Amino acid sequence: MRVVAHISDLHFGMEDERIIEGLLEDIAGFHPSVVVISGDLTQRARKKQFEAARAFIRKIPVPCLVVPGNHDIPLYDVVRRALMPLRRYRHYITTDLNPVFQDDELMILGANTSRAATFKNGRISTAQIKILADTFSAAGSHLFKVLVTHHPFLPPLDYPYAALVGRGALAVEALEPCGIDMLLSGHYHRGFMGDLQSHYTAVGRSIIVAQAGTATSKRTRGEKNSYDRIIIGPPDICFDRYAWDGRRFVKAMTTQYKKVNGAWQLHPQNIHETR
Ligand SMILES: [Fe+2]
Ligand SMILES: [Fe+2]
Image 1 (cartoon, protein in one colour):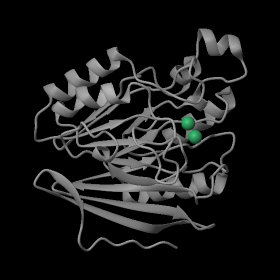
Image 2: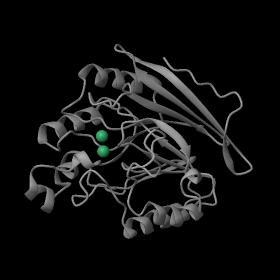
Image 3: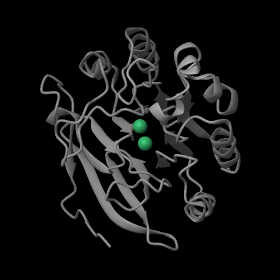
Image 4: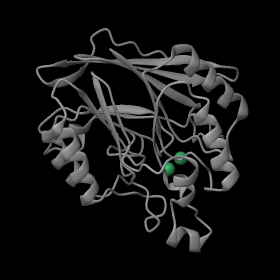
């Protein structure tokens, strides 16, 4: 069994300092196997914002897997945006744009979907798809395989026409045979879960999709700040969403799935509890 903390859309520059402290306390307390940060670490890719994001990551006492978001590319500095869009991200956060976390139960790969040319939208390249497919294929079938991107493969339930990651269908087609189990993303500041098959009808396998809300940004778009604790113990997977209640993170919702005959099914005793 593994426990993953999935946090997204920190937006340093627009962060709530109390929530940052609460999040670090939580992570230190439940000590996940790995923390996944699915992009938008900063609000405007400024030096001070990246410094704050780096300081936050350095306080996390477990491995972190990080991918950039569209906000981690400068928006108004057109020269920097055109010529060196991820320079600050590489300098302050990591030079690794194809991050990997692996232990004896879990393989998590990250892919950068943020592009200077697409502004807030994102896409994945054919070269990235090949790297991901080769890496997932070479890994043992006993591993639970997870892909992390900032831009999502599935639209939020209340926003069905939301832009999805470009070349997503191509990526799904290539990655499905590699035994991928789960996709994690952020971007829309809305937390939700679903099955990839609900949107990509050609997909032959059940692949679970989990979107995190914004962990710490003051731009919450109608939802409380939140992050997910994901407990992975195939054939069971449990998502515990922790939402900020003004003083601390509290468990706001639990969603459990069980893989039955190759398909992720909501657990019969699924508990939904919203505060
Ligand atoms: Fe964001
Ligand atoms: Fe974003």
